[in-house]
Each structure stands twice: as structure tokens, then as C-alpha cells.
Length: 375
Image (cartoon, rainbow, N blue to C red; front, top):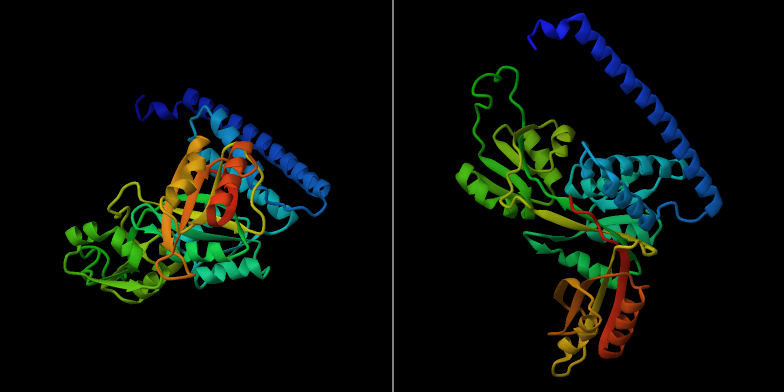
């Protein structure tokens, strides 16, 4: 069609008809959303004060809709939309308070909103310890904390705290980590003069972000000083005040701190992801596709570690994670963190756990929860 043909009466009539259909669908969506919200309120009244966040129920809804989706929207897009609908419906009953490793603009905050949606009270905490304490003391209902990164490995402090804490793992979030290089935008007088007339002399970033981007930085900014800071948000704050500095982090920090994006996706590993745990006072009921996390230690006997894990192998239960960590109880003693498929209420897994308990020096089930969808 020529440029002139786009404005013919026939084309304008077709465009008007399509827009009218979209308007009708939008009206129907609004009506259905309102109906869904009213039903969610009715469910809340029926539960009479029970938890408004049911991780297993939300996981089942998301899986069903992803499976039924025929496009053109992607499964990830459908999941984001329905999570926001569920978040808004939850907020009609009560605003859920979620503690996370702050400050604002970090990947931890992204993980909160990916899992719980935007209609929550996200509480930025100074460190991982404070996230646990917020839930233990009732200042928050849940905490979202990082536990491992595909490039940098396990987060030791999270593993230590989850052993000692009474909190249970009730969910997980798998978040793709895309590092963005940002800096202060040029002043009006500088605009158009090679965009940024001042070269980058320093790059701020959390130690993990710098490690995840070291090859890219070596190639593109070989002479820049790499400065480790307590958080990427702190790096953004400093970069916003220095014309010759840049920072790494989540792109959300650009808007928060008035920065301009220099380059997106500067991480060395394209599939770099971080796994976060959702912690609460109770774990989740079975959802149909679950994980169970546990920690154990072996008795001081030959072959004790193999014997400890044998019940899982005998039952055909797959382990997706096995991590050893020094115990706090004594020198050269270790505990083993295991993530296995299934729910602790499943008969097969329950029997295996009972057998492990007879063989272990120490066993603690950290929680059963719906397996997250990687996206």
C-alpha cells in the first residue's frame, strides 16, 4: 500500500472498526477484572482471616494460563499480567509487606515485584539479616532474599541464616540478571558534543556485579578504575554526582537516580540468573510441581555422606542442588544443603526424609514450595 493509500476512506473505515473492537474488548476486560476482584474478596471473607497469599494456588493459576496460552503474547507476558491482577486483588484485602535487600533500584526489588506484583509494600532493608528479622518480628509478612547466582555461586549469609531461623521457604524467584552501564547524562551545553565529552574514569558496582561484567569492562573500559560499593544503588548515587563515573546495576536505577543508559546487557554470561527465596512463617501446600529444601549433617562415620543421600536415590527423587558449607558448631564440620523435587507431604519424599532422619546427625526441612518458572 502506498503512503497515500493509508489514508483512503476504506483504510480509515477499517482502522476505525478495529479500534472499536479493541474498545469493546477493553470494556469486557474491565468488567471481568472487576468480577474477579469481587470473587477474590468473597474468598477472603470465606477464609475468615486466613493468609491472603497462597503460593501454591497462585502457581497453579499461572501454570494453567501459561499452558493454555496460544499467543501472540508470550508466556512470560501472560505471567506478568496475571501476577499484577492477583497482586491488585490481594491488596483489596490487605497490603502485603515484603522485606528485601535494599536499597530501592536493586535486583532484589525486581525479584519482589516479579513474584508479588506492584501492589505490595516493599520494605528496603540494610542487609540480609534485617530481612529475616523483619519477618520474625512481624514488621513484614514475607522476605525475598538472594540465595545463589549462576555465575558467582551461593550467598553464604542467606544459607547460614535459613538454618538458624524459624522461617520457612514458601517460594522461589528465578530472575535473569541483566547488568546495565549507566552514567550522569550530559548537561544541555554538552549535548551533541560526542554525547559524553568526559570519558569514564571510574565504574562503581557491587562486588558481584563487577565480577559478572569483568570481561566486558576489560574490553571496553580497560583503563577505568573499578570501585566496589555496598550496593548498586550506592554506585548509582555516586555516579549521579560525578561526570566521569559510571555504575553497573538494574536499569530501574537509571530513573531513580536520573542516569542515562550507556549500554545494556554488559554481563559476561548471557544466561546469568539469580535465585531468590521467599520466606514466611509457613511453607506452601502442594501445588503439583514443587521443590523441598533441607539441610543436614552426617555422622562421623566412613561413607556417612553417601549413606545420608541414599534414601533419595533409592526413591528415585531427583536433587537439583547439593551444597556443602562449614557448620557453625565446630571446626571442620560441614552441613549439606539439598534441593530436591517433590513436596514434603508427598508419600515418597516423606518416607525418604524419615529414613534420612534416622541416619543424619542433624536434619531440618527448610520448606516445600512451588517450583518457579525461569524467564
